Length: 164
Image (tube, rainbow, N blue to C red; front, top):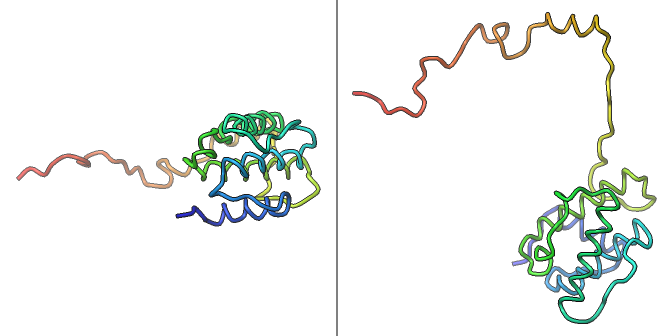
């Protein structure tokens, strides 16, 4: 059965806008070509040669070129997928996650075109004065004696059997 959830459908829609077609049933052929085209739309020239024919080895080079281009575009390794995830359809969810991460990164880089997913948060660093920091030390926190009246888990027998 084909894997279709809302994230996969959204990723497919983005591909259709950019590249026209990506078939998960023919992932090793159309997918390896499509991801190279997608990254080239976001960052022109990032994948210089996209193999469209040849054996599996040549088509796997497309995935490797995409991964290198995506890293250069700013995606962390944790959000990339492995070649077998696409080629053998082992983890299409990870492929979809990678495409969504690429969409977030495109928004961050102010890509002028269709985007995918929510915009990434930007830094909101705050500066506090010494007086504000000292005042915060005297505040009662949420999970201490001030809010739960000194309650603790002492005396609870979690995981122990009942003695009869």
